[in-house]
Image 1 (cartoon, rainbow, N blue to C red):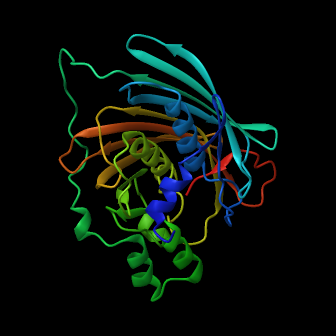
Image 2: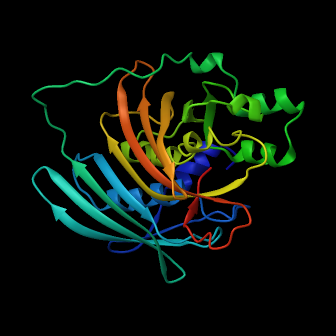
Image 3: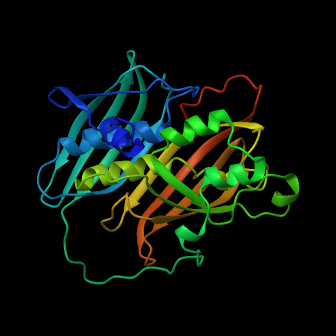
Length: 300
């Protein structure tokens, strides 16, 4: 399976081992900890597999509790909290080697006609994604060639990511920079037609670049990092149907960073400027070399 999009769909295809209990693969990676978006996406799949009827996910709230180990399967235990006339609630606990590493609560809502509708316009007028270089192209342009580690990552990367403001490489480029970032993203190949797969794939992607906004005023986004960072908690609200294999704009900002923690907010739009998803995440930031980096999962 050479297509990264196909590998992502396969990663989200959990094995049901008992009623309300599912097992997900955790690929052997060079990362220190399991990628948080993977755990959140798989947990949401487990929750969705226990619901009936046409009830898409409308929100999720999650806590990353312990670091997951790459290469070790993760078991997802689903609690059927509520099955109401309009809403369904599920609570998922992710367990690896007998220890809880992640908790998620997801709510599903039967579609209904609203009495009114409004949304704020997008904050930025972003250029079209096709006019922007890929991350790999930007790295090649700056370094002259793609380093081997980035080439391996590019081959496995299930999403095409294009930075609206280009990458920042030097201290001068981040001088006086606001804690904001925006990227165009889409899966690198078709993801099929199951709406739950698209929702879980976008959940995976939502953890890839969000904490960039926290780092922008502190250090260049690419090159040697001065901080180890990890996701602490993650919340999402899904407003409209979408496909994760079509372009979406992820506008990100960080209103505050203090006490070793940084808060980031994200708004995800389609190419027509319709707000699809709202995201909030808090991350832990510590200088490399400090002990006690016991937070759960790594971001991208």
